[in-house]
Amino acid sequence: MTITQDVWEPYAVAADGAGALPRPVRAGELTLLVTGDARIEEVGARVVEVDVRAPGPEPATDADGRGAVRIEWRVPCVDAVAYWTPCASDGAGWLPAAWSAPRRVSLAADAPVGALVGTGDLGICTFAVQPAGADGEVLIGAGVVEETGEFRVWLQARGRLTVRIDTSRRHFAACLEGVADWWRRGGQDRPVRVPDAARRPAYSTWYSMHQQVTPEAVERQAALGKELGLDTIIVDDGWMTGDRGRGYGHCGDWDPVSLPETAAHVARVHALGVRYLLWYALPFVGRASSVWEEFQGYALARVDELDAIVVDPRYPAVRAHLAERLARAVEEWHMDGLKIDFVDRFHVAEPPPAGPEADCGRVDEGVELLLAEIRRRIDAAMPHAMVETRQPYVSPGLWPYATMIRAVDCPLGPGENRRHVIDTRLVAGPLAVHADMLMWHPDEPAEQIACHLINVLFAVPQISVDLAALREEQREALAFWLGVFRDRADLLQRGALRPARPDLGYALVRSEGSAGQDGRPGAGVAVARYAALPVDVSGEWRELLIANADADPCVVLRGGTGRVTAVVQDARGRTVAREVFGLGSGAGGVGGAGGVATVDVPRGGLVTLTRE
Figure (cartoon, one colour):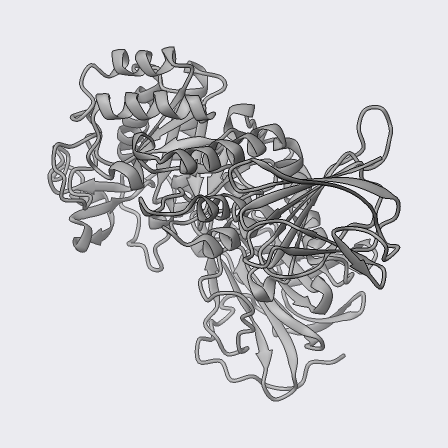
């Protein structure tokens, strides 16, 4: 296919300095328009890797001296249902127009990947950029060409672009697994260490306490949480100030104003068998900070509405201050890690020119130097330290500096939490993925609490309610489902993830485990059902879990053979039914006809199918 149709581009960005007009080149079944010198390699069935560099001699190391390179292509937009990105803010099922504003992706914001998804969850076209190849920000434009009904993608960066394009029409999650593996291979010299503790359920103080943080309150919730199986507590905003008015005016000094005798307090939490992480708003220096005046000359951006500035990590003085402030939580107070917030605030569209004290030209370089120094220091003090980052800064370039990524804030939004968790899981590579903190109204029924947990079944839950105020049925639901998370962690977090219907916010999600050490196939399968959709029970699994978050209790089982035992538990973990029936014959289940079986699972409940 030759690209001839012009597209209206109100947000067009010129490929300045490339020194050549775009030219068409073939890449498998695609015709690319390339600005720069291209090398194309077929690396799999209908998967190509394209490396484009600015023409002429080897580009200069100074970002301002490098030319821009660009790749563009189109595919027929046939049977397409959704355009997937890892940090979508416009909801499920969005197919943007080709003239939409491009995404600006950097180390501190988003990840350079996208996928056009078709009917049946097929990956029509999945693409990604290798961050190690791009020099700074990557622009990504994608959308429907109204004049032709095609889907157009263009990518632009300075100096070099290394791009993977997958049109294999496999399940889109399998295509994205390929992207994550490709990213991992591109950073072979940068080890990523994720301790098992990063995959265990945690307690967070944010929604339950906000800034009302005291040692007594933290220790009480840590003790109650440990009884429920919450092995880590993450203390959020409020510990570094006596002010309770929210805002970020007190960031920058990071003195434990609300946690006196900090090391002794941490030791008491450790004595409970609970790990301790501490929150930091990394980029902010607030007006009330002692370094406010000193750091005015190092401001990357002003955020007056937050009563703070974003400091510029291109300056060694900034990095030294922040690294020392954050590292002492582990070095001096013996905490188990850090929650590093607001890294995306370093992503500034038009940063000021670097001053004479700066030792790097790009903000991303400074961010990486800062995070590397923080990680080096805390690892030296505690080799298994944890670091939490957060959506939308999900770039694989941050993998070496983190152990887990949390979904973006969505209080009391179970569907949104589910979507953010799955989006993040699909390209998180080796990192653990945490859900946004779960909270609920004091009158929330046990069934809905269970649904909150089922919506984040394929991530690590963080609980943020007053555990002392739970009613007995609420506590039972929480304890039951936290037990499922702990007991099935490998299957839920490390299994092959296959979410269905991204256009509907992932109405059904499946995770498949690998064969056991005994060589028998199908160690286990877990399915979460968020709408009244049938569940495919074919395959050679030994045990299949189905968690029901839908109001319709009738779960339709389609496919499969043989007889199974079904144990049904309600939202509180109480066994409410035990059945033995056949799959696929139309003769079994609580009811069955036409090659399907059915089983009733109450809202917030779980059915465990075991093959005889």
